[in-house]
Image 1 (cartoon, rainbow, N blue to C red):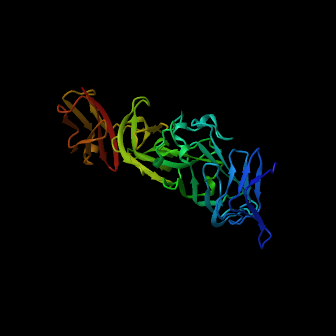
Image 2: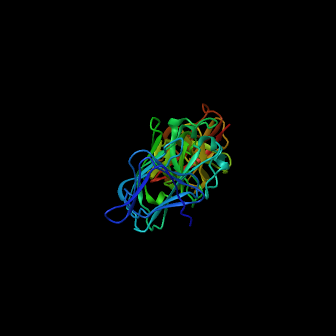
Image 3: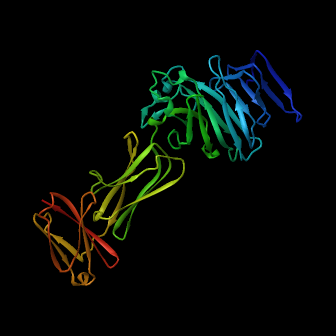
Length: 407
């Protein structure tokens, strides 16, 4: 391992009372180049101190600082990155790591042009959003914050990135106030599985992440326009039959600028119709659970999927799930298709249980509510528009849903 340092101006290194080296920058510059490594074996947060000006230039994946932070003492750590044009410090608090021998690898990685996809750091395969190159919405720099040697990685709080104005300038299409921090998941090979809550100061050119659990720390971070980030990280979407109704449920672990969810259903898994909508959280890094009940589902096998829509109208579909509702022979409807009248045929046993019928349109809107009183009850449908309808018949703590077509 190379440990080559080019030191300019004034740099003072001294031994503390605990015989651990400290680096004090007072107008000095440490330039780490050609794959060199600056190793800081002192785990204390005061192992690197900036008392005036000065900075550490570390630009490139292999020009690194390795700081043996260990478990983290919970106080503020400063990595005084910078270059000839800008001071770009990285600040954070670290605590609750499991291993005193654990280390963090730090570096910054500027891209040569706005097109980040041509200058990706090692291990990062893309800067895509919905499968499309998102370089124009990504700032022209990456940050390496890479914990190594931990059984349980330390949690970070008050993680502050500093950026320069020229790193989001045209031909990027970034609105500075919309910038958020994102990190690359090197296991799942994606950016969009986790959205920590970020706040930006356009005056100080900083983005602050209030907290991040150690389990969410991997290698690389960058900044991206929040309007281009994917809206929701969906854990699952499922559907089940309960009392002849279909209950859909889904869970998210993060939401960024999410607007609403729509539940869609189909008889053939090809043509889908929306049956309901729920508002989304907007922004969240917590686990959230949602449910929606289809009160007039199709009989037999049907299919459901979830549409997630963000505040800019972008959307994403969930996988398709299927359910099956067995049809009872106790109640029948005919003719089907029907023109003017529909006959609801029921057994005497059903009539004695005072069944309640609810008429719904194809989108699940309740149109009519009535009691079935005869074994061959006639329903006038002359005022209905042509299309598909459903009758949900409830008795004896169960519901049977029948469908028909109005010509």
